[in-house]
Amino acid sequence: MPDKVKSSVLVLIVSVIILVAISGGFFVMLQKEKAKNVSLAEELEDIKTRLKITETKLDDSKKVVSDLGAKLQQAEGQISELSTTLEQEKVSKDEALAKIEQLRLDLEQQKSLRVDLEHKFETAQKGALAMQAQLKELGAKKTDLETKIKELEDKAKQAQAQSGVELGKIVVGLEKSQKQPAQPVGIAAKVLVVNKDYNFAVINMGSKDGVNVGDVFSVYHNEKYVGDVKVEKIHDSMSAAGFLSADIKDKVFEGDKVVRKGK
Image 1: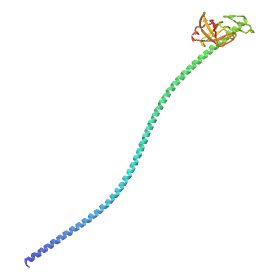
Image 2 (image 1 turned 135 degrees about the vertical axis):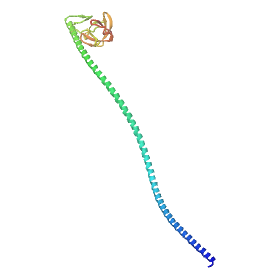
Image 3 (image 1 turned 90 degrees about the horizontal axis):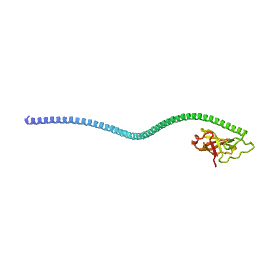
Image 4 (image 1 turned 180 degrees about the vertical axis):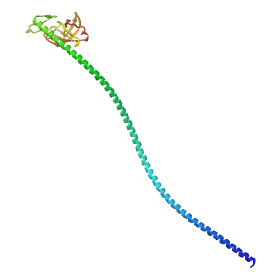
């Protein structure tokens, strides 16, 4: 066989081998690429599945977020209500504390007033006891004075019955059947008793002498005018006359002359 043919066959063989090798490599690459595509397809499907799951979870999350938003708004409303209620309770608490403080002050004031009233009541009780003792003493003096007036009246009646005794310029001891005329203005009598506690004097002129309640007499001590007295109570032959001024009770004495004043 000629060399040229050998070379051609050899080249052909080499070419076939190369072509087979290339085809084998291409086939291997194609298988790898196919396997890779299958793998990528599986991964893509897995990604799609995960994406759907993620979208589902995202929708669930959106729903949860929406629910949380609604709950948040509701919670904010409740917080606002609670804040308003808390503020009102704070105001009510402040008002209650103010009332409690006012009540405490009122209670302290009432306690102070009670102590003051108890002190005043105790003082009034002591004053009442002292007044009762004084009234008892004055009652005893009044009884003694009434006894003296009765004795003086009895003595005057006895003097009238026994003889015509002249007291001052008044004639007593008239007969019972004879009516005593009213004493004219200016007729003098005298002071029988002076009572400084009750502010009156007893004079020896009474209803039988024409003396009336309200008559005014001027009092003379040693022929010196000291003041006036006004008849308040009348007996048959004597009268009780009150001092018309407070300063004359220390200037009037038993035996002083009294003269009835004109009306």
